[in-house]
Image (tube, rainbow, N blue to C red):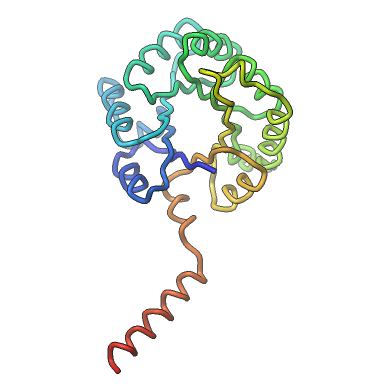
Length: 226
């Protein structure tokens, strides 16, 4: 499984990249707003992320019509070669995805909540499909079940001809809220987990590791004092 960081914070991205754990970044207007981003600096900010990350950087279109989404997609793709255009799963988004995919521009189809949506995204030519987990949990439904269904359904078919440059579609476990979400997504075969920095840090931690380190340090102190 690969890990994408779900953030617009350059410090978080640089830190995760220093661990060797970062395969890409996903961002959106809400995440950009959290760091006090301004519309006038948006493209420059995406460029700075692309300069840090040696992998795909998903930047989201905020347009609602296919023509406007295509225009946004072309502008975003021109920022850097590793930009992926993030588009919501909707009729206008599907139409825009088909146009952009035919132009060789990779698309991450986001806000996906069902197998039919995922199959339509695949047929439209999406390079990545992002089923959401946490949003289902918010309404007391099992987002992991939905993710597993999408992974199974997409895996049943060869969608290679519909993807950019002949690459296989990858399923991104999105809206991840916990290390357990990552564990279950990995066990069911999701290709990527996009996680907030807070979750990525928790993934490193385990009480037995802490206990082992404490024991190690105590034993080493005894050796030094011997």
